[in-house]
Length: 226
Image 1 (cartoon, rainbow, N blue to C red):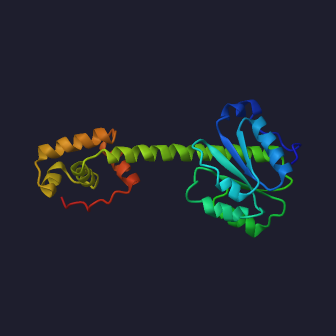
Image 2: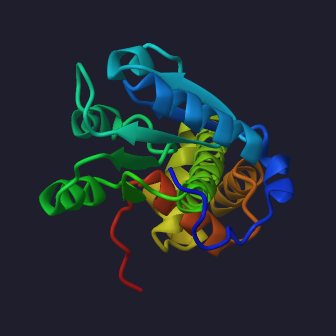
Image 3: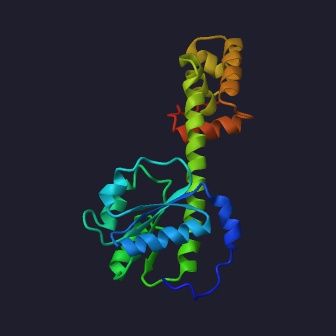
């Protein structure tokens, strides 16, 4: 790596505040691992290094912002195969590829599969640090979305069966009277259930509840003719 390139625009002291973020490194070259470990630690992130894809896969998932600096050529699974293996269950961990002999098809394949960067050795420290900074930002946003979704699912799980029925009809556009007719309950009872749904789902408004239903991908009934 060469650190004599264009200056890194964010000072390293400001990066130190991100010490909870983890940067995983998978590379079979011990000198590369040691070099990256020192660089990442100095930048303020927590490095975790592995010599093979299988070694990395045996490591438990972390629930803090993270990214993976991944060599393409590995002794067991190669980097592209590892990317494919973890694509579905580690979406909160962006991948930065590094290689000593990349080519255009390889780069295109990696980027299409979601890699945030594909660097060919030798590369400048600042280039890698910028890529890590961007990847950690993506990871933080993904974890925030995931936490929001878990909270939403917990709220929905707290609804009774009747409250779920009322919610589905309300977000589909039914009026309270129409909901009552479909469920064979009084309009007053509908209003009571609707109020409980709003409180349990922590919805501030009907549009808010509709957005929640969309995120939950609730099957909505077709809107009744007015």
